[in-house]
Length: 432
Image (tube, rainbow, N blue to C red; front, side, top):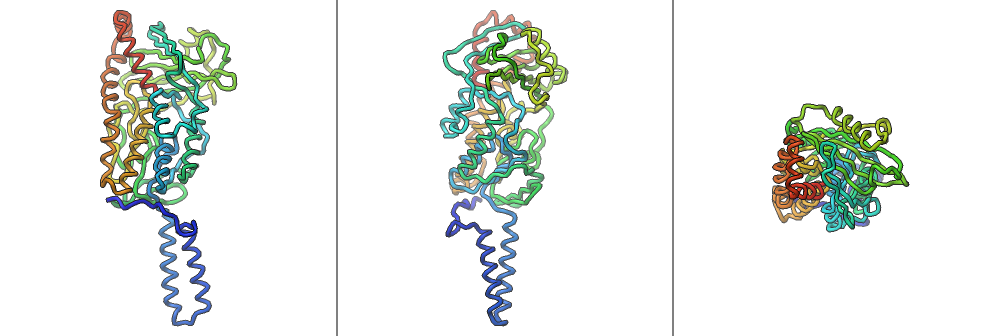
């Protein structure tokens, strides 16, 4: 059962730890002045104070968010905005880059605006006004628009700004601190152990990614058929290069998956986020698919890419492909983002749906801590209303798109223009 939030500060703005230290100092001072018959009483008080102080070393919060990426920061921001005591724990130090397509749909941007989390990221977005669909190294169709239909971004900057925004709204944030254990103590209390301290809270939010410890400890491991590998890297080339339009997203479909090119301009240079996603059933390794994709682009675009990776690295990154199939809530835990499976099964986009999960998680937690509901199960009802039908449709479309013979699929699209329209719509809505 919920027990209300830890909202009010102590008189004079002091926290519990400060008050306990000051009280112990007063007790020790009095002990030097009082007769011996009071010594035992004051000794008992001192022991009690020390016990309370040691208990508070396992710092108590309303909510601990494990993972300080964008979705953990959004969840923490919205809960802290309601004046609950929130801790966000991030194992790395911002700014840091995470493997990602770095694209977000207009639906995602509208969500950020609706819940007043757009301001910190509004100046780092690059507008996309074109979409290109390709198959068998043939351009099926390219559409241009008068205004942005999606945006690209730098994940390191994006994550950092949202993390700082959570701090501004009152969330306590810890960086370079890794969570190594999560244990449910009872229905009202959960323990989080890190490389530095032990903490306790009423609720834990797992925002620590597909292989995060919260999902593994409190739910289960993902099954092999529930995740699929992606590979991604970023390349910096001259903005004047004619083969890449700086405001056009490209999708390149092959049997079993697709490749993408998401561009943005930074410091007068063209940054290309290039990656591939494949289904678990496809036998070719992600390394082979990615290298073949890069070779085909080098030939088609007449540009040198291999060896020009930013950070000199190609990143591997698994994503959940079956939606929220392992559960998203327990008595005192909610999963958001990739940890909860909130990734479009057709496109692999996760920012929009992860942000939706973060919004619903924050609403659920606030209602629970305010004693308006007595279970976190309503979280599933909330996200299902917005997301479940989209993911169900995406799962159906995925089979037709990725497991059909590409030549046959291309012939069908050329014969039925509505199929092209549906494909544009699916990938514009599901970019992220």
